[in-house]
Image (cartoon, rainbow, N blue to C red; front, side, top):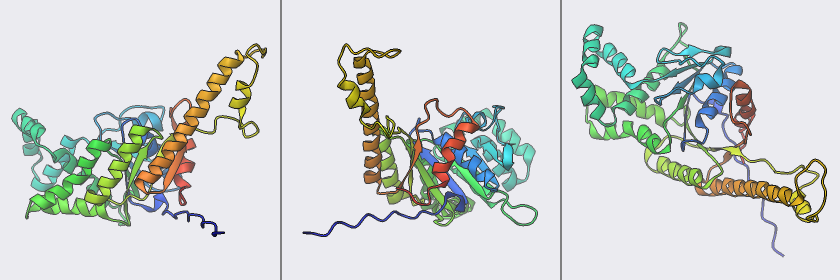
Length: 332
């Protein structure tokens, strides 16, 4: 008789709060912004000075973090426990960069207000991604009066998967294409920040469904092969819970076995209940299947977050996600 196979060791993961920069991405609709908000809120409550950074055209963090949904904008705004958020607008970041480089704010303002210049920039590829990441680098470098980091943890809500890869690859492309000068130096600094294994982490967010699972596997493969930003786990969001109470794990089978004419006071007909239970069982098993596929396709440990029936509506719901994120020093 052959010996039983040894149980697979459970990987030990560094706590997320040990990082300086976490870049969150994933297919649109997977809940990556909710993950950003939940992680940021939990980190702030743990005493970290946290800045959350949005990079999209619309702001979604304020409505999740507070009843006051007014935008944070480029200047940013504060919430409870010292948590802050901001949105990086590429033109605002470009204006700030040019003012720092040229030292002539009136000239910079006139250039950026010029319609022809705007049209030229709108047609130029890659500059938005590079200037946005350059601003993230600048935020990461900022220090307080005592020399301590102004932000102990930056969490970036990066573009969705397809654009997210372009977003992360631009510094490497610039370093490869530009031989010398300030542009190359700045792109090199950004690339070094992204590839810093001790400080930086890419955090993909998936759903236990086919398309998000496949996109996440492709994202991880391409990041590992070509981009080089560290990635050590995948967050699988909205995982359906077991459909029936622990004492009645076969409730669907029991309902299916009832006579069609059975009377259940206050309840629907047995056939309706049986079909509903079968649907719940199917949804749970499909979710479990895709959790396993994500694990297999990415080769990474998974952090699973619960499905919330009413979605994420505010801070209370974010707090229901936080334990799964911060308790993931060991991931399944």
